[in-house]
Image (cartoon, rainbow, N blue to C red; front, side):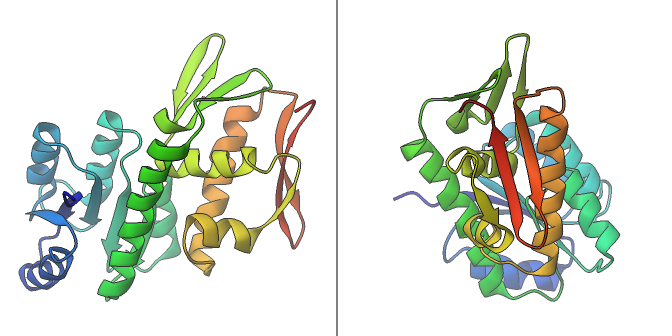
Length: 229
């Protein structure tokens, strides 16, 4: 079976060598040492996932993720950074990143995160139903496409995964830890904050739809309420 192709962006030569050497045992890894080189390459070749440092020359990781998202709304993006401030993590997630690991990171954890995202993408392609219909929306999980009668919204892979999880469990209270372990592979603090960001994004999409809402269940989790579903 062909290895999945990873775009790895890191300007620290030693760290890049060690990380790429480990990743290449599992994936086809293409390394770039500047954000600009990475984006130019991304525009020319197809990748399954991106792993990006934030503090990069020419174009930093935040700018790179923004440009990648303009061209591809669903490719998974994992940030690797020495920036430990939670504001930086939240900024990265708001820009469309799927995860954020702080240096020094465990190579085993990085590989696990990559495999979770890639396996989930494959499951979508293999098993996802053609469409869900709820309220005034139609959702095609394999295409990350959410449609209204007058417009279409392309979700990120993480948004699509979360929405599909809710639609597979409509009008049901879902514990935070169940959502996190199912979609993130962990239920730590920063994964929880990431979940809150994506819940907020989906709520903005549904704010004009009176028959669909995501409710907070205090100290428990969330429930997606769909009237007459």
